[in-house]
Length: 225
Picture 1 (tube, rainbow, N blue to C red):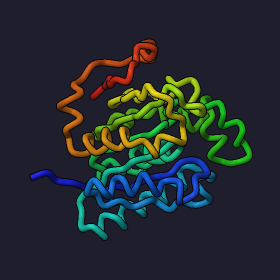
Picture 2 (picture 1 turned 30 degrees about the horizontal axis):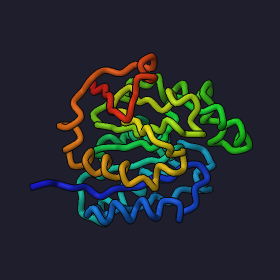
Picture 3 (picture 1 turned 90 degrees about the vertical axis):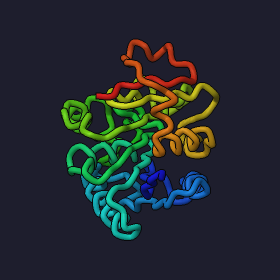
Picture 4 (picture 1 turned 135 degrees about the horizontal axis):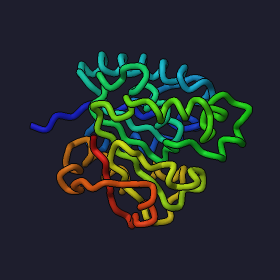
């Protein structure tokens, strides 16, 4: 019998609660219990603090649904908040699988436009925060992850920043921008299959490097360690 875990959706930088409404409803139609994390200051504040709040939200969801693990979907900055929780706060013990939508895993230069916020400064590619997060060997620990990347992402530039070196990378090759990823029915289908374990069987496994990013053509590459 297929075992399904409740999903926690972690919104992106400055995203209001209604932004993820359609995305959550689509996952609910697919039969999942979905909870949106309520993080302080619309995710504009200190990322470790937001991750600590996420840790509390995870425990609340585990109790509410009498589950031993959850699945997590993080959009944009929400993916970085999720990674910090997994890597630094022991979240890997409580998470079955994680999906990142348009997440700048190596930072993003446009974060300079939000330099007046703590999260904006932390998201800069050469920030101490991003260097520490990406040098942490725990980034590969025990969690199967999927990063969904859009070729037409106007925020995550260069697109190679969205490549996850310890997980699957699925590339969207049609005009779909950064904020539009949460409205993509195709992305929802990939996420459902990933959480159900069907994705692993269908996509297989090949290695990926940043140098091969130009080869992506609505395909999937993965690094599972």
